[in-house]
Image 1 (cartoon, helix red, strand yellow):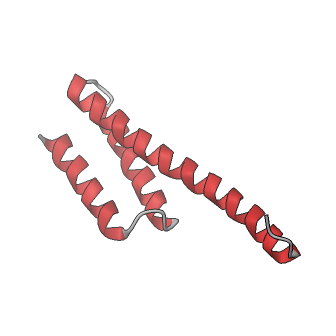
Image 2 (image 1 turned 45 degrees about the horizontal axis):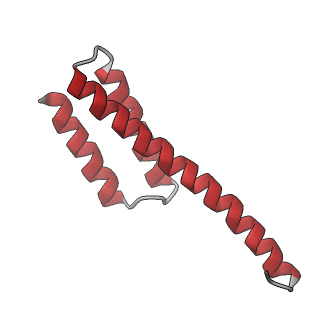
Length: 84
């Protein structure tokens, strides 16, 4: 544990940011998995789940949690899966 006050505050800030980022990434992964599972099962609400998953990917990319190419790649794969 640091002794300097600014370092102590930085540790606290980093922990908060880590918790937020982890939660956001988890939401994105969960949305993608829900879409994949619904598509495999042939559910009725696949379009809605697709939109939610794309939105989650876009949010994660805008916050800098994933790179732009990964976001584009994930959305492309989901769109292809939806069209299939």
